[in-house]
Amino acid sequence: MTKFNLLASACLAFLAATPAMAQVTLPTPTPTPTPSLPVPTPGLLNVNVDLSTGQALGNQSVLNAIANVGGPSLVGVYLDLLKGATSGGNTQLLNPSILDALNTVGGPSLVSSFKSLIGSTARNVDYVNGQINAANQASTANVLAATTTTLTATAASIGNSYSMNAAARAVADVTQGNTGTGTSTLNSALNTVTTATQTAASIGNSASFTSPASVLDLSIDQNNSGAQTATLVTVANAVTSATSTAAALGNSLSVEMPGGSVIAAAQRNSGTVIADLAGTVSNAVTSTGTAAAIGNSYSLNSLNSGLAGNVGSSANQWNNAGQIAKIGASLATTTSAAVTAAAIGNSVSINVK
Image (cartoon, rainbow, N blue to C red):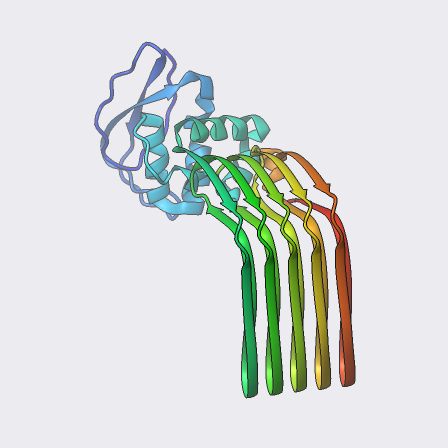
């Protein structure tokens, strides 16, 4: 039987230790409120600590780190974990500030033990989704704006769209198949507009995953054979800031998740992709125009990698269709202008933070 001392946050009932656990008896001192720790109450606290996660998890420094970031309520969540009474707020404990503090106190081994405890008790959710689209999508926006402060105009056609924002450990297996054509058209006439943002976008398959602190295990398969076309035509006068984008993509995948996560992705595009931007801009301060045609696009942000390790990523892309990006622009009396036409078969962007 292993024993160690720990300041407790509230009156908790005695818990009996099981044979696979070590029972720890924790005396609680006379109440002394501090800014970083919850006010203790008289009595004893029995905590069952799985020995496989390391007894260092009961160290006072761990409680201090949690309390400094999340206060007494988050310390309570952590104590519930040590007792085996889990709750939905477990993933709050993966706050990068807490992990950084624990790394300073006990190094990578303490962080690993801490993450193991959280990971073994947090909720696990499995998602299996399949999306098939064989129909055509068409969107058209005709815009006339004068004496306007802020204008946002969008025409978007998407065959299949999937989005996940995870606050718990999750496993997702997603397949998307699109054979339908996508056509997006935006026509505009602008006069005396402070800020104008215009977008025409056509996408065969789109999937995005966001998980700031919870580990994900993803398997993504995207297949597009439908032609995707985005067209934007604008006439603008006296626009302080103008941003115009025509974007067409066969498959788009965007992922942001913490280190320790895993993703296997496959993207196949056989549909012709066309992005066409045309316009006349005069008397503008800043003007930005972009036409982007991409067969397959994959973007990954690996968060908190310094402590949690990198994401395991395996991505395969196949493109056997043409990409066409066109810009026809006329600019007059404009202080700053940037014009970009980009045609890309396969694109991968990985950012490790």
